[in-house]
Image (tube, rainbow, N blue to C red; front, side, top):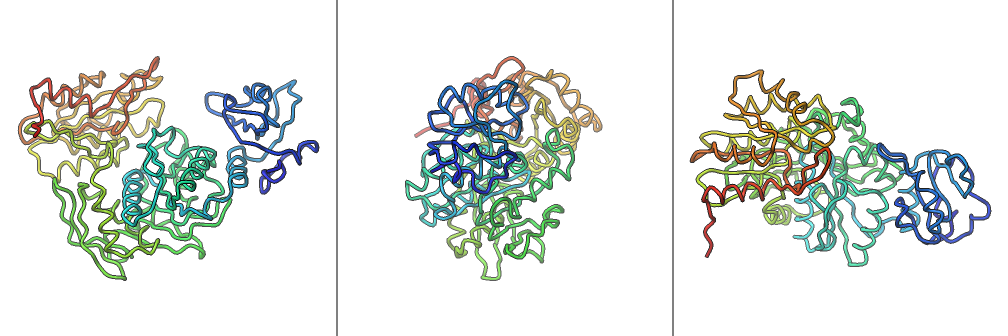
Length: 495
C-alpha cells in the first residue's frame, strides 16, 4: 500500500512529501526498536518520554518518515509529517493498512468504572457458547482464539489491536469483546473502530489524576456511544440504574437496550437470590424470560450479567443460549476470587481499587453472612489522591476490622498514601491496624480470622506484581494468601 493510501482520512498539518507519496509502506510502528525498512514511525508525546527523541533511530532503521502531532526536533531534516492528532492518525492508518476489521469481525466494547473485566469475560463465554471463535482484551489479559497473553494496557494501542484482529481473522474468528478504558478513549487508541455493541456499566470516581474532573471522565466514557472516526455503534447496552447511564443518549443510528432492576429497563432481573454459590434470578425481556444461574457472587454481578445479556440480545441470541453462556463463565481472575486451603473461614481476593468497587466487594462479602468481615486494602501511588479518604471511609463503614496497607505505591512514600486513606478511615471508630508491607499485612489479616469470618484482600486482584519506587517485584495476593494459609497449617484435601 502506498503512503498516500495509508494516510487517507487523516487530518494533516503539513503535506505529504512529494517524493514519498507513491512509496510503498511495509509496516507501521510506534516503537523505534521495532522499525524496519519501509515503515512509518509514529512519535507520540508522553508523560514520561517524547517519541520524537527516537525519530533519528527510526530513520536509521529504515523508516520512510516520522509522523507526529508535534514539530520535528531542531536540526532534524528527514521526512516529517505533522498530523492534528498522533494516536488518531495511527488508528486511521491502521484501518487503512490492515483493512476495516468490522467487515469480518463483530466488535463489542465495554466501558465504565467497575465491572468491565467481568462483563468482557461473560461476553466472551456467551460467544463461545454460541460456537464462535473469539478474542477478548482487558485488564486481566488478552486471549485470541484460545491463546492467552499478558495485558500491557487495559485497551491496547490501536496498532496492537489491529495486529491481533488480523490474527483472529486468520484463525477464523468472528467476535471480539474488549474493555474500553477512559484513557484509551481520551487518547484515541480506538478511534476509527466501528463497534457492533457498546456497553456502559457504571461511573464513580476514578482516574481524576488523568481526567481532572468527573465531567471530563464521563465525557471520555460517553464518547464510545457516538461516532468517533467511524460509524456510531449499531447497539448500545446502558445501565439505567446508574445516574450517569441515564445521561447517555446515543443518536438515532444506534439502537439502545437499557438494563437494570427497575420497571423501565428493557432487560431486567427479578426474583434475585445471591449466596456463596453465586447468583440466581429470572431475566426478563420483551422476547420472554429465562432463569439465570451463575457462579459469580453478589448483586454487582447481577448488573454485569444483565450487561452481557443485553449485548447478547443485540447479537440476536435467544435467551436460552444467553443463559447457557452466562452459566459457563465460572470465575473471573481476581474478581471476588476465593483462596481455599480448607480453612474454616473465607479468603477472597478482589481487584476493588475505587470507593465504589470497595463498597461493592464488602457488600458482596456481607451478603454471604459471615460472622465478621476483615478488609485489607491500600491505595495506588501516583494516582487520584481524592479517592483515598473515600476508600478509607468505605472500608470503615462496612467492615468489622480493617488492615490498611500498600498497593502499588510507585514513586510515592507508602506512609503518605496511607495517611491520606486514614483521613476517611478514622472518621469512624472501626478497629484497624496499619502495616505498609503488604505480605505482612495479609498475614496479619488472615491471622485475625476466626471460624465463620471472611477476609477480603482488596486492590490487586489478578495482578502479579507490586510496583515500588525503585523496583517492581513479583507479588500475587492469591499466591501470598495461599502460602500463608499453608504456613498456618491449612492444606486443601486432594483425591
